[in-house]
Image (cartoon, rainbow over all chains, first blue to last red; front, side):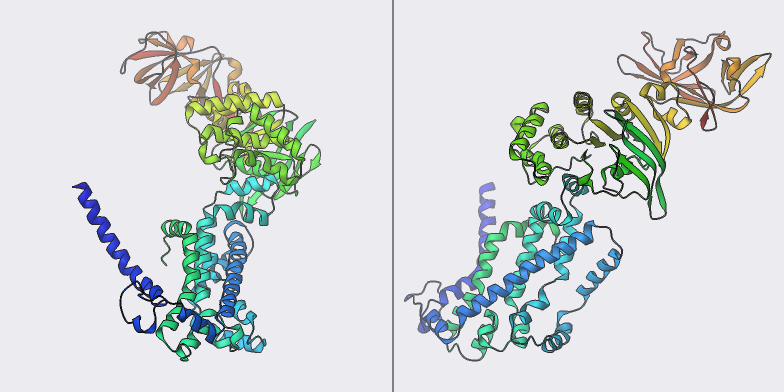
Length: 271
Length: 360
């Protein structure tokens, strides 16, 4: 009985997992199919080919866009982690005048929808003369209120005696943050990292507003321009470019998955 | 020459005064215990000494040097925390050596000191483990080792045994005492547990509401508590208190309360409302109602509960409206409901006028 129940359970779970994974696998396999085969739902191409990727690479600077995306998303993620955790540490563990106000303001920022700040932000970037530059892509995202609050929440749970010990041992506040708090905060740091990286990686609207030069375009932006502008020509090529977009995120997730799930479970944050 | 010196130290959090006008000298090599209930200010005093809490007013000196506004790392003191404060992501060895590495002590010297502390605290087999893999007692020893390797001017202990079970606590108490005597390092030890205070301290400071109640050797606090608070705080089971008044007739003084009458020496007379304090172990219990009770400082009681602890037993009894406790080592114990006669041993009674002691 027990075995049967187990088999039924695993069967059901496998089925559920397949419904999630199948479209992705289909897309992956379709990129290796010639145009004549793309319409079928089969997972394995009869005549596998790399033509879709060759075409894509030849028609637009995807290599460059990939590097741009890595650079932009990487810089933003690093900055959100470093500056965000410094802010979060101060908000969680240091006593200073105006701390409650800072907490309230940070919380308040969450209430403002991103779309609302789009136009003022655009105006600022234009006035600063930063249109068509990496700075335009990166600057607005260097700080992130959600990340600060998540890290602050986590930092609040670290025992005060660790800070006290570290101060007695001779550490300064920065050192306490990076050599005591960081190693103990891997779950929250990885979830912040992956959310920030994915958010930045998938961002299309903002790059479309501030960057027009192809050499500076990020991957999703170039992809959008490429596919919607008819540059792809065929669905296989469109899917191939989508694959290039997705793979880094999948890799990042696979690497950080353990912390990611841990953090989801412990912080109750829903993705 | 005092090793640690507090001069008129006051600490306020906002408008709340936690410690007021605190003055204390700790002698070189002394083990001084700060004891008090929660909110007594004992931990705040220790944290001010460590530099983890700012001093609102006053001066703290360590080894003649004014450290009042120095950072913790510049004070040359080491602290052991209640929950140990070990870095969970580092091995025992790394935990022990971190403070030395940050102070740029030479590697060979670090190794020597870690080996020395490891040997003294029986930590060698554990040096490459993480704190999570250690028992509570072992973590406690690592925390002590971390303080020792620094070779500081003073050790500060903040309720180091509170997280241990009773048996281990008794064992670690002995270890800490032994270690401190061997090293001879000046130590300030904070606890809420008066047994720890009595057994460990060269001297004890009893605190309540941020004020010093009494400073003295353990036996002085026990024998001659200066006020009712100290009398009730020091000693287990705690001292019995009876409210009453003192009368003097024909040169004979007596303490009178409902159901209790105790003859006093003439010198003890201080008329008016008085509180009588009697330690449970300063009472003898005789079975049966003895008629001559008033003549020899005896009074009757009725037993309500007997706790047998093996060597000694606690007899809870009522005398008039007063519920009292006697700790005795009788062979024959009274039964619940039985009448007894209680006699006071020698001159060991304590009289308090309001809060303050009036005689010894």
